View (tube, rainbow, N blue to C red):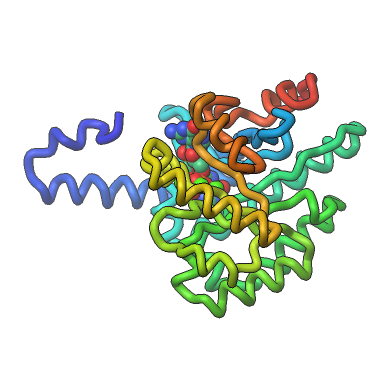
Length: 279
Ligand code: C2E
Ligand code: CA
Ligand code: CA
Ligand code: CA
């Protein structure tokens, strides 16, 4: 459950102490956990709205903690962003994805591009681009098979750093996907300034606004402007056929959501896309 009995704490200071102990415990174990392969990559398909074919996937991390089960990223990513471990974890996920793409290529399969999430913390450690490039080269992965997702709000943290980052990523050949677009920061005008390749309409934005006409107008505006700018649009968190039909009608390119599939282990994804498991 969400508060795992923490609501039962009588004294506030006890709760804080429990949380600090829990954080310390995780900090003591996170590196070993990485070595032991406890962090697992799940893949969620992205569907081409025109053809209903799988045209990509997003890699989403899960932590398989012995005795505690599968833990979702919201439970540990914020802590790893505070203590810096996210840099190692993101690189690890990226490496796992490259390894798997190599396996698909070696098996004669036609891989779809995989999107990997990048924490905002990377913006203060720009050497990461070279590291990622080296990993992709090591596994001989064509850069067009790699997309990096960066949340929209980083643009406002430091516009110049963001622009430098996009330029460097494009030099390597990785595509940049603007995650959580519409979550509250962007203006349509800003879109013209952003040299991104893919725009992901935020799930919340979509859920809250898709039901009313004003929201629909905004989504239409974003999609049509993106089209003019040659930016592909992915809607995330699509759960109903009604939403999918609307998105298709207004020219949104791709959708990702429980309507099609939940994030799944890589073997299941292979069964889903290629009709065979490689595990
Ligand atoms: P995100 O990048 O916005 O990822 C989309 C989230 O929406 C995922 O949650 C996914 O499971 C969920 N989702 C997809 N379709 C639907 C739907 O139809 N309905 C609903 N209700 N949810 C849907 P998840 O896997 O729990 O990930 C949460 C967040 O954790 C991600 O949000 C991302 O910000 C972060 N994250 C996940 N993996 C990584 C990683 O490897 N590195 C970094 N830095 N962050 C990660
Ligand atoms: Ca994402
Ligand atoms: Ca997102
Ligand atoms: Ca989101």
